[in-house]
Image (cartoon, rainbow, N blue to C red; front, side, top):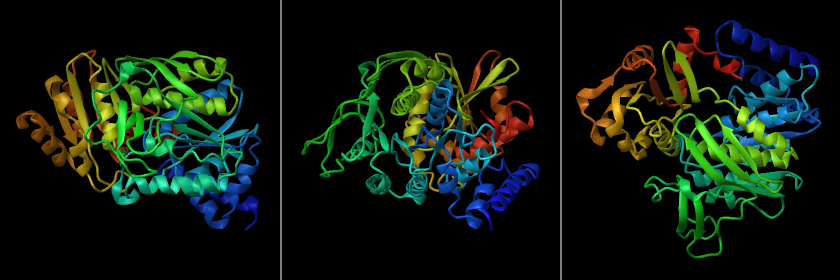
Length: 458
């Protein structure tokens, strides 16, 4: 089939998917396009005069991509992106397909990419900039141990064109040690001791040197296994940060004031997404913008303009109350979410939604590595829902929360309504869902007219 008819057919599939209520058409058109035109991504990407930026990580891809998108917009660059979160090869193909019919044409591609899909996506896109932010234990039934992902990323980097710019998290040893000396590398990280943890969490993942296998030691820890690290045996150590968070002031669950040191001068701004994890996301976005030669006078306001992506500290106003959706899909992310929720000084109303579908990971044993215990003294009401609601109830019971105070409601709509009913006027319900549970809950809210469908978000 020639190029024109194949593009038309794939776009028709997307329109049908949306009309039939089968989703937002964020993946199906790309699947069709790649089936009938396997070289479509390469050809469509070649039409982008400023190339492509690819972002991958276990946690934070969507939010970071949003912040980079604001930087591109502030610099006057028209971007094509998979903003709805379809981050496999088919999602990238769909985004490029949609971008090809825009007028004026997009100038640059911006794609968040699944960790396992990254090597193939990068091979086809030959990105101008590749941002690698973190590696945490996630979906072990699909990915295997994170070291296997790190090895695949290392092999990918070795095959990249030498003019590709790497943006790497200096604080994550598994990511920092991917620098190979062949590519220009921009490192980012946190240099503010005020946000350091008391100790390395018991569920920390990368605690051994990738070079020699010996234990790592830490001068300070900021999130999971990320911090100021060095090997106890060889010379491996956290590299110098080109873009560093010198000041992070967490503004409860409303955001953070940050100061970034960059090669082009300091950036002081407020980001609307809360928690140290989002401060890292902002630093990654700033580093990517610098790699793209975007001026710092643009970056600060762009980071301030960035809003939460769907389900990532997304606030939903419901009458005189609000719900905050905080995706929590693995131990590192869930622990960070717990710390973020605890910044709210008021008694806490929490709904936890646990599913075990393919996109979540079918092994839910990871919930036993999440430190839910700090929540207990602050909990006013707790509701659990989802396919594995009883597993989550058991986890909180073993943590020491009174069983009679745990509401178990497997149906997500009824669970949401019951949990919201506990919330006083002017207060907040914190919702901590896994990925497919998040999609279910947002579909419920969309049907009620409270949020846009996720593929229309942003």
